[in-house]
Image 1 (cartoon, rainbow, N blue to C red):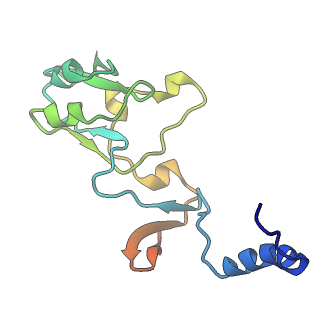
Image 2: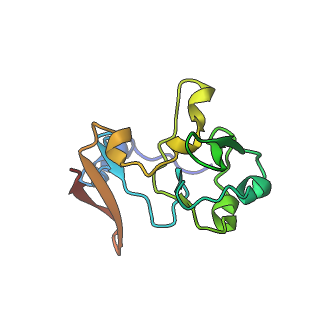
Length: 159
């Protein structure tokens, strides 16, 4: 058995560990008032440009989760994809397969709802959204930068 440290070491060791971390910057963010901006290749909310979509069905055919169904849109000639984000695994096959480049990923990952039906987005709801529509109380967007001391966050006021 090892020798037990003396009484003074046992009492002051916890204070030493706390004091070491006292001046580190916090790692938590004040979400939803501050939000970390997604990286350029973030697979988040999928948008549909309904003007260029030809309704070919390629996206629904390649979807491994069967999260894409097709519905008619009033005043439009084709059926267009509707996404069930409750089933979607954000694999990106639909975006890669689209022949007209009508589907795009955004860096918005705030997809939630109280009921399952709220996660089904019809074709006319898949428009490009501003983050302020989803998080109206957001004041700052944090951009991650990597330094030799670790990650730092640059705060940018959101209009």
